[in-house]
Length: 437
Image (tube, rainbow, N blue to C red; front, side, top):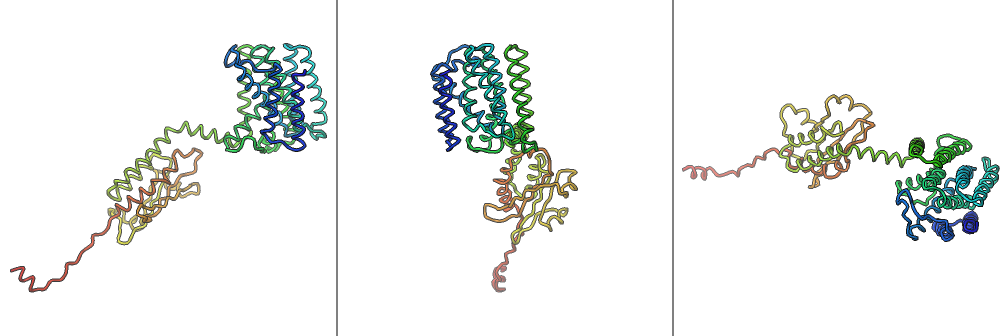
Protein backbone atom coordinates (compact mmCIF):
# COMPACT_ATOMS: atom_id res chain seq x y z
CA UNK A 1 0.00 0.00 0.00
CA UNK A 2 2.82 2.42 0.79
CA UNK A 3 4.40 1.70 -2.62
CA UNK A 4 1.24 2.93 -4.33
CA UNK A 5 -0.28 5.46 -1.93
CA UNK A 6 2.82 7.57 -1.20
CA UNK A 7 3.49 8.51 -4.87
CA UNK A 8 -0.30 8.74 -5.38
CA UNK A 9 -0.34 11.44 -2.70
CA UNK A 10 2.34 13.33 -4.64
CA UNK A 11 0.13 13.16 -7.75
CA UNK A 12 -2.91 14.32 -5.77
CA UNK A 13 -1.04 17.35 -4.38
CA UNK A 14 0.18 18.17 -7.90
CA UNK A 15 -3.42 18.18 -9.05
CA UNK A 16 -4.50 20.41 -6.16
CA UNK A 17 -1.83 22.99 -7.04
CA UNK A 18 -2.82 22.78 -10.70
CA UNK A 19 -6.50 23.35 -9.83
CA UNK A 20 -5.73 26.37 -7.65
CA UNK A 21 -2.85 28.10 -9.42
CA UNK A 22 -2.19 26.25 -12.66
CA UNK A 23 0.94 24.23 -13.50
CA UNK A 24 2.77 24.07 -16.82
CA UNK A 25 2.94 20.79 -18.74
CA UNK A 26 6.67 20.27 -18.20
CA UNK A 27 6.36 20.69 -14.43
CA UNK A 28 3.47 18.23 -14.47
CA UNK A 29 5.48 15.66 -16.38
CA UNK A 30 8.48 16.13 -14.10
CA UNK A 31 6.46 15.50 -10.92
CA UNK A 32 4.62 12.58 -12.51
CA UNK A 33 7.99 11.16 -13.58
CA UNK A 34 9.19 11.34 -9.97
CA UNK A 35 6.06 9.53 -8.78
CA UNK A 36 6.54 6.87 -11.47
CA UNK A 37 10.17 6.43 -10.40
CA UNK A 38 8.94 5.88 -6.84
CA UNK A 39 6.71 3.07 -8.13
CA UNK A 40 9.69 1.56 -9.94
CA UNK A 41 11.82 1.77 -6.80
CA UNK A 42 9.04 0.09 -4.83
CA UNK A 43 8.96 -2.89 -7.19
CA UNK A 44 6.06 -1.96 -9.47
CA UNK A 45 7.86 -1.89 -12.78
CA UNK A 46 7.96 -3.14 -16.36
CA UNK A 47 10.67 -5.80 -16.50
CA UNK A 48 10.01 -7.19 -19.97
CA UNK A 49 7.81 -6.71 -23.02
CA UNK A 50 6.76 -10.26 -23.95
CA UNK A 51 4.95 -9.31 -27.16
CA UNK A 52 8.11 -7.76 -28.62
CA UNK A 53 11.05 -9.35 -26.80
CA UNK A 54 9.71 -12.60 -25.35
CA UNK A 55 10.97 -13.44 -21.86
CA UNK A 56 14.10 -11.31 -22.18
CA UNK A 57 14.56 -9.11 -19.10
CA UNK A 58 15.04 -5.43 -19.92
CA UNK A 59 18.05 -3.49 -18.59
CA UNK A 60 17.08 -1.39 -15.58
CA UNK A 61 17.28 1.92 -17.42
CA UNK A 62 14.98 0.69 -20.23
CA UNK A 63 12.59 -0.78 -17.69
CA UNK A 64 12.57 2.52 -15.78
CA UNK A 65 11.89 4.50 -18.97
CA UNK A 66 9.09 2.11 -19.99
CA UNK A 67 7.53 2.35 -16.52
CA UNK A 68 7.64 6.15 -16.51
CA UNK A 69 6.13 6.35 -20.02
CA UNK A 70 3.32 3.97 -19.06
CA UNK A 71 2.43 5.90 -15.90
CA UNK A 72 2.55 9.27 -17.66
CA UNK A 73 0.43 7.99 -20.53
CA UNK A 74 -2.39 6.53 -18.42
CA UNK A 75 -2.35 9.30 -15.81
CA UNK A 76 -2.73 12.04 -18.43
CA UNK A 77 -5.12 10.00 -20.59
CA UNK A 78 -7.79 10.09 -17.88
CA UNK A 79 -7.07 13.76 -17.30
CA UNK A 80 -7.53 14.39 -21.04
CA UNK A 81 -11.04 12.92 -21.24
CA UNK A 82 -12.25 14.87 -18.21
CA UNK A 83 -14.07 17.36 -20.44
CA UNK A 84 -17.71 16.57 -19.64
CA UNK A 85 -19.49 15.96 -16.35
CA UNK A 86 -19.14 12.33 -15.36
CA UNK A 87 -17.15 11.22 -18.40
CA UNK A 88 -13.74 10.56 -16.84
CA UNK A 89 -15.20 9.05 -13.66
CA UNK A 90 -17.55 6.75 -15.59
CA UNK A 91 -14.83 5.55 -17.94
CA UNK A 92 -12.52 4.96 -14.97
CA UNK A 93 -15.24 2.92 -13.24
CA UNK A 94 -15.34 0.38 -16.10
CA UNK A 95 -11.53 0.16 -16.18
CA UNK A 96 -11.38 -0.28 -12.39
CA UNK A 97 -13.89 -3.13 -12.50
CA UNK A 98 -11.73 -4.89 -15.08
CA UNK A 99 -8.69 -4.38 -12.84
CA UNK A 100 -10.67 -5.84 -9.94
CA UNK A 101 -11.57 -8.96 -11.93
CA UNK A 102 -7.92 -9.44 -12.93
CA UNK A 103 -6.67 -9.05 -9.35
CA UNK A 104 -9.45 -11.34 -8.15
CA UNK A 105 -7.97 -14.08 -10.31
CA UNK A 106 -4.26 -13.32 -9.97
CA UNK A 107 -3.68 -10.87 -7.12
CA UNK A 108 -3.43 -10.98 -3.30
CA UNK A 109 -6.44 -9.95 -1.15
CA UNK A 110 -4.94 -6.57 -0.25
CA UNK A 111 -4.80 -5.46 -3.89
CA UNK A 112 -8.33 -6.77 -4.41
CA UNK A 113 -9.50 -4.57 -1.53
CA UNK A 114 -7.64 -1.53 -2.91
CA UNK A 115 -9.18 -2.02 -6.34
CA UNK A 116 -12.76 -2.53 -5.22
CA UNK A 117 -12.40 0.41 -2.81
CA UNK A 118 -11.34 2.62 -5.70
CA UNK A 119 -14.34 1.39 -7.71
CA UNK A 120 -16.68 2.16 -4.80
CA UNK A 121 -15.20 5.63 -4.34
CA UNK A 122 -15.63 6.40 -8.05
CA UNK A 123 -19.21 5.10 -8.05
CA UNK A 124 -20.16 7.17 -5.01
CA UNK A 125 -18.55 10.24 -6.53
CA UNK A 126 -20.25 9.62 -9.89
CA UNK A 127 -23.68 9.97 -8.24
CA UNK A 128 -22.99 13.71 -7.84
CA UNK A 129 -20.68 14.16 -10.82
CA UNK A 130 -23.14 13.07 -13.51
CA UNK A 131 -24.76 15.87 -15.51
CA UNK A 132 -25.87 18.24 -14.05
CA UNK A 133 -22.88 17.89 -11.74
CA UNK A 134 -22.56 19.42 -8.29
CA UNK A 135 -19.00 18.22 -7.64
CA UNK A 136 -16.09 17.83 -10.05
CA UNK A 137 -12.92 15.77 -10.32
CA UNK A 138 -10.58 18.60 -11.24
CA UNK A 139 -6.99 17.71 -12.07
CA UNK A 140 -6.49 16.44 -8.53
CA UNK A 141 -9.15 13.77 -9.09
CA UNK A 142 -8.53 12.79 -12.70
CA UNK A 143 -4.74 12.61 -12.28
CA UNK A 144 -5.11 10.56 -9.10
CA UNK A 145 -7.50 8.06 -10.68
CA UNK A 146 -5.28 7.66 -13.74
CA UNK A 147 -2.18 7.19 -11.60
CA UNK A 148 -3.83 4.58 -9.35
CA UNK A 149 -5.06 2.60 -12.35
CA UNK A 150 -1.62 2.69 -14.00
CA UNK A 151 -0.05 1.43 -10.74
CA UNK A 152 -2.61 -1.36 -10.32
CA UNK A 153 -2.01 -2.39 -13.93
CA UNK A 154 1.73 -2.62 -13.21
CA UNK A 155 1.02 -4.91 -10.29
CA UNK A 156 -1.20 -7.10 -12.47
CA UNK A 157 1.50 -7.25 -15.14
CA UNK A 158 3.85 -8.93 -12.65
CA UNK A 159 1.37 -11.56 -11.50
CA UNK A 160 -0.78 -12.37 -14.53
CA UNK A 161 0.02 -14.45 -17.63
CA UNK A 162 1.69 -12.67 -20.54
CA UNK A 163 -1.34 -11.86 -22.71
CA UNK A 164 -3.37 -10.81 -19.68
CA UNK A 165 -0.59 -8.61 -18.37
CA UNK A 166 -0.04 -6.81 -21.66
CA UNK A 167 -3.37 -6.73 -23.48
CA UNK A 168 -5.99 -6.37 -20.75
CA UNK A 169 -4.79 -3.03 -19.30
CA UNK A 170 -4.40 -1.52 -22.77
CA UNK A 171 -7.83 -2.68 -23.95
CA UNK A 172 -9.62 -1.80 -20.70
CA UNK A 173 -8.16 1.75 -20.85
CA UNK A 174 -9.23 1.90 -24.50
CA UNK A 175 -11.21 5.15 -24.50
CA UNK A 176 -8.63 7.38 -22.75
CA UNK A 177 -5.77 5.79 -24.69
CA UNK A 178 -7.64 6.32 -27.98
CA UNK A 179 -8.37 9.93 -27.06
CA UNK A 180 -4.72 10.56 -26.21
CA UNK A 181 -3.42 9.00 -29.44
CA UNK A 182 -5.94 10.89 -31.56
CA UNK A 183 -5.04 14.19 -29.89
CA UNK A 184 -1.29 13.68 -30.39
CA UNK A 185 -1.64 12.55 -34.02
CA UNK A 186 -4.06 15.37 -34.87
CA UNK A 187 -1.79 18.05 -33.47
CA UNK A 188 1.31 16.64 -35.12
CA UNK A 189 -0.44 16.49 -38.51
CA UNK A 190 -1.77 20.03 -38.21
CA UNK A 191 1.59 21.39 -37.04
CA UNK A 192 0.31 22.53 -33.65
CA UNK A 193 2.13 22.02 -30.33
CA UNK A 194 1.15 18.71 -28.74
CA UNK A 195 0.33 20.33 -25.39
CA UNK A 196 -2.04 23.00 -26.73
CA UNK A 197 -5.68 22.73 -25.71
CA UNK A 198 -8.42 22.53 -28.33
CA UNK A 199 -12.09 21.66 -28.65
CA UNK A 200 -11.69 18.73 -31.00
CA UNK A 201 -11.69 15.85 -28.53
CA UNK A 202 -14.05 12.95 -29.09
CA UNK A 203 -16.73 14.38 -26.78
CA UNK A 204 -16.45 17.80 -28.43
CA UNK A 205 -16.90 16.28 -31.90
CA UNK A 206 -19.99 14.39 -30.73
CA UNK A 207 -21.44 17.61 -29.31
CA UNK A 208 -20.81 19.28 -32.66
CA UNK A 209 -22.83 16.50 -34.31
CA UNK A 210 -25.89 17.66 -32.38
CA UNK A 211 -25.89 15.29 -29.41
CA UNK A 212 -26.71 16.57 -25.93
CA UNK A 213 -24.30 16.49 -22.99
CA UNK A 214 -25.98 13.44 -21.45
CA UNK A 215 -26.24 11.60 -24.76
CA UNK A 216 -22.52 12.03 -25.38
CA UNK A 217 -21.60 10.79 -21.89
CA UNK A 218 -23.93 7.78 -22.09
CA UNK A 219 -22.61 6.90 -25.57
CA UNK A 220 -19.02 7.02 -24.33
CA UNK A 221 -20.00 4.95 -21.29
CA UNK A 222 -21.15 2.35 -23.80
CA UNK A 223 -17.82 2.58 -25.62
CA UNK A 224 -15.94 2.14 -22.32
CA UNK A 225 -18.13 -0.83 -21.44
CA UNK A 226 -17.35 -2.45 -24.81
CA UNK A 227 -13.61 -1.96 -24.26
CA UNK A 228 -13.96 -3.46 -20.76
CA UNK A 229 -15.94 -6.47 -21.99
CA UNK A 230 -13.49 -7.15 -24.82
CA UNK A 231 -10.59 -7.01 -22.39
CA UNK A 232 -12.25 -9.66 -20.21
CA UNK A 233 -12.37 -12.00 -23.21
CA UNK A 234 -8.58 -12.09 -22.93
CA UNK A 235 -8.64 -13.63 -19.46
CA UNK A 236 -8.77 -16.97 -21.24
CA UNK A 237 -6.71 -16.19 -24.32
CA UNK A 238 -6.82 -18.36 -27.41
CA UNK A 239 -5.87 -17.62 -30.97
CA UNK A 240 -9.50 -17.17 -31.99
CA UNK A 241 -10.44 -14.92 -29.05
CA UNK A 242 -7.41 -12.68 -29.56
CA UNK A 243 -8.13 -12.37 -33.28
CA UNK A 244 -11.80 -11.60 -32.61
CA UNK A 245 -10.94 -8.89 -30.07
CA UNK A 246 -8.39 -7.27 -32.37
CA UNK A 247 -10.80 -7.39 -35.33
CA UNK A 248 -13.68 -5.84 -33.38
CA UNK A 249 -11.40 -3.15 -31.93
CA UNK A 250 -9.86 -2.30 -35.29
CA UNK A 251 -13.17 -2.07 -37.15
CA UNK A 252 -14.85 -0.17 -34.31
CA UNK A 253 -12.09 2.42 -33.98
CA UNK A 254 -11.87 2.90 -37.76
CA UNK A 255 -15.63 3.40 -38.18
CA UNK A 256 -15.82 5.66 -35.12
CA UNK A 257 -12.99 7.93 -36.22
CA UNK A 258 -14.48 8.18 -39.72
CA UNK A 259 -17.83 9.32 -38.32
CA UNK A 260 -16.21 11.92 -36.08
CA UNK A 261 -15.07 13.76 -39.18
CA UNK A 262 -11.57 14.85 -38.18
CA UNK A 263 -10.09 17.04 -40.92
CA UNK A 264 -6.56 15.82 -40.17
CA UNK A 265 -7.43 12.18 -40.89
CA UNK A 266 -9.31 13.20 -44.00
CA UNK A 267 -6.10 14.81 -45.21
CA UNK A 268 -4.17 11.63 -44.40
CA UNK A 269 -6.66 9.63 -46.47
CA UNK A 270 -6.24 12.08 -49.34
CA UNK A 271 -2.46 11.72 -49.21
CA UNK A 272 -2.75 7.92 -49.14
CA UNK A 273 -5.08 7.99 -52.13
CA UNK A 274 -2.72 10.32 -53.96
CA UNK A 275 0.13 7.90 -53.27
CA UNK A 276 -1.81 5.19 -55.09
CA UNK A 277 -2.28 7.59 -58.01
CA UNK A 278 1.41 8.46 -58.12
CA UNK A 279 2.18 6.57 -61.39
CA UNK A 280 -0.35 8.70 -63.30
CA UNK A 281 0.99 11.84 -61.60
CA UNK A 282 4.48 10.91 -62.86
CA UNK A 283 3.14 10.59 -66.41
CA UNK A 284 1.35 13.95 -66.32
CA UNK A 285 4.25 15.76 -64.68
CA UNK A 286 6.70 14.39 -67.21
CA UNK A 287 4.44 15.60 -70.05
CA UNK A 288 4.70 19.17 -68.73
CA UNK A 289 8.45 18.89 -68.12
CA UNK A 290 8.94 17.50 -71.63
CA UNK A 291 6.94 20.37 -73.12
CA UNK A 292 9.20 22.88 -71.33
CA UNK A 293 12.27 21.32 -72.93
CA UNK A 294 10.65 21.18 -76.38
CA UNK A 295 9.50 24.80 -76.17
CA UNK A 296 13.11 25.86 -75.69
CA UNK A 297 13.94 24.64 -79.23
CA UNK A 298 10.64 25.29 -81.02
CA UNK A 299 11.24 26.80 -84.50
CA UNK A 300 7.84 28.27 -85.34
CA UNK A 301 4.45 29.13 -83.87
CA UNK A 302 2.79 26.05 -85.35
CA UNK A 303 5.28 23.81 -83.55
CA UNK A 304 4.56 25.66 -80.28
CA UNK A 305 0.87 24.84 -80.68
CA UNK A 306 1.59 21.17 -81.36
CA UNK A 307 3.76 20.99 -78.23
CA UNK A 308 0.95 22.46 -76.10
CA UNK A 309 -1.66 20.10 -77.51
CA UNK A 310 0.58 17.08 -76.88
CA UNK A 311 1.25 18.19 -73.29
CA UNK A 312 -2.42 18.66 -72.36
CA UNK A 313 -4.01 15.84 -74.33
CA UNK A 314 -3.15 13.18 -71.74
CA UNK A 315 -3.36 15.08 -68.45
CA UNK A 316 -6.33 16.00 -66.24
CA UNK A 317 -7.00 19.42 -67.77
CA UNK A 318 -9.81 19.53 -70.31
CA UNK A 319 -8.97 22.63 -72.36
CA UNK A 320 -6.70 25.62 -72.71
CA UNK A 321 -6.89 28.98 -74.44
CA UNK A 322 -3.82 30.92 -75.52
CA UNK A 323 -4.36 34.68 -75.87
CA UNK A 324 -1.37 36.47 -77.37
CA UNK A 325 -0.05 40.00 -77.03
CA UNK A 326 1.75 40.85 -80.27
CA UNK A 327 4.50 43.39 -80.31
CA UNK A 328 4.45 46.13 -82.99
CA UNK A 329 5.24 44.71 -86.42
CA UNK A 330 4.56 41.07 -85.42
CA UNK A 331 2.04 38.73 -87.01
CA UNK A 332 1.03 35.09 -86.70
CA UNK A 333 2.45 32.84 -89.39
CA UNK A 334 -0.56 30.61 -90.06
CA UNK A 335 -2.28 29.19 -93.08
CA UNK A 336 -5.57 30.51 -94.49
CA UNK A 337 -7.61 28.12 -92.37
CA UNK A 338 -6.49 30.02 -89.29
CA UNK A 339 -7.47 33.52 -90.44
CA UNK A 340 -10.18 33.94 -87.79
CA UNK A 341 -7.76 32.91 -85.06
CA UNK A 342 -5.13 35.27 -86.41
CA UNK A 343 -7.53 38.16 -86.09
CA UNK A 344 -8.32 37.26 -82.51
CA UNK A 345 -4.67 36.55 -81.70
CA UNK A 346 -5.82 33.49 -79.77
CA UNK A 347 -5.84 29.72 -79.96
CA UNK A 348 -8.25 27.42 -78.10
CA UNK A 349 -8.05 23.65 -77.69
CA UNK A 350 -10.26 21.21 -75.80
CA UNK A 351 -10.58 17.48 -75.48
CA UNK A 352 -13.05 15.88 -77.94
CA UNK A 353 -16.70 16.14 -76.94
CA UNK A 354 -16.24 18.82 -74.27
CA UNK A 355 -16.90 21.98 -76.29
CA UNK A 356 -20.34 22.66 -74.80
CA UNK A 357 -19.45 21.41 -71.32
CA UNK A 358 -16.65 23.96 -71.04
CA UNK A 359 -19.19 26.80 -71.36
CA UNK A 360 -21.03 25.63 -68.21
CA UNK A 361 -20.42 27.07 -64.71
CA UNK A 362 -18.89 23.77 -63.56
CA UNK A 363 -15.42 24.70 -64.79
CA UNK A 364 -12.45 26.06 -62.90
CA UNK A 365 -9.58 27.90 -64.52
CA UNK A 366 -5.91 28.69 -63.93
CA UNK A 367 -4.66 31.86 -65.64
CA UNK A 368 -0.95 31.85 -66.47
CA UNK A 369 0.59 35.22 -67.34
CA UNK A 370 3.25 34.75 -70.01
CA UNK A 371 6.28 36.93 -69.26
CA UNK A 372 9.42 36.11 -71.20
CA UNK A 373 13.01 36.26 -69.99
CA UNK A 374 13.33 39.51 -71.96
CA UNK A 375 10.48 40.94 -69.86
CA UNK A 376 8.04 40.90 -72.79
CA UNK A 377 4.41 40.23 -71.86
CA UNK A 378 3.31 37.63 -74.39
CA UNK A 379 -0.29 37.22 -73.25
CA UNK A 380 -2.20 34.78 -71.06
CA UNK A 381 -2.78 31.06 -71.12
CA UNK A 382 -6.08 29.94 -69.54
CA UNK A 383 -6.11 26.29 -68.45
CA UNK A 384 -9.61 24.83 -67.84
CA UNK A 385 -10.87 21.77 -65.99
CA UNK A 386 -14.37 20.51 -65.28
CA UNK A 387 -15.21 20.04 -61.62
CA UNK A 388 -14.54 16.45 -60.60
CA UNK A 389 -14.46 14.39 -57.43
CA UNK A 390 -11.16 13.00 -58.66
CA UNK A 391 -8.08 14.87 -57.50
CA UNK A 392 -5.97 16.65 -60.09
CA UNK A 393 -3.24 14.20 -61.09
CA UNK A 394 -0.63 16.88 -61.71
CA UNK A 395 1.78 19.04 -59.74
CA UNK A 396 0.39 22.52 -60.32
CA UNK A 397 3.78 24.01 -59.40
CA UNK A 398 5.08 22.76 -62.75
CA UNK A 399 2.50 24.92 -64.53
CA UNK A 400 3.17 28.02 -62.45
CA UNK A 401 6.96 27.66 -62.43
CA UNK A 402 9.15 27.17 -65.51
CA UNK A 403 6.35 26.45 -67.99
CA UNK A 404 4.97 30.03 -68.48
CA UNK A 405 8.46 31.47 -68.98
CA UNK A 406 9.44 28.73 -71.44
CA UNK A 407 6.23 29.33 -73.42
CA UNK A 408 6.73 33.12 -73.44
CA UNK A 409 10.36 32.70 -74.62
CA UNK A 410 9.19 30.37 -77.39
CA UNK A 411 6.63 32.93 -78.52
CA UNK A 412 9.29 35.65 -78.40
CA UNK A 413 11.45 33.55 -80.69
CA UNK A 414 8.87 32.13 -83.12
CA UNK A 415 6.35 34.88 -83.80
CA UNK A 416 6.89 35.98 -87.42
CA UNK A 417 8.30 39.45 -88.16
CA UNK A 418 7.42 40.85 -91.59
CA UNK A 419 10.45 41.43 -93.85
CA UNK A 420 11.75 44.97 -93.75
CA UNK A 421 12.44 46.65 -97.17
CA UNK A 422 15.60 48.70 -97.01
CA UNK A 423 15.61 51.57 -99.59
CA UNK A 424 18.80 52.08 -101.57
CA UNK A 425 20.26 55.59 -101.55
CA UNK A 426 19.56 57.66 -104.68
CA UNK A 427 22.45 57.81 -107.13
CA UNK A 428 23.20 60.41 -109.78
CA UNK A 429 22.34 59.49 -113.38
CA UNK A 430 25.77 60.32 -114.65
CA UNK A 431 27.35 57.88 -112.26
CA UNK A 432 24.94 55.15 -113.34
CA UNK A 433 25.80 55.86 -116.98
CA UNK A 434 29.47 55.75 -116.23
CA UNK A 435 29.06 52.44 -114.39
CA UNK A 436 27.04 51.05 -117.30
CA UNK A 437 29.73 52.06 -119.76
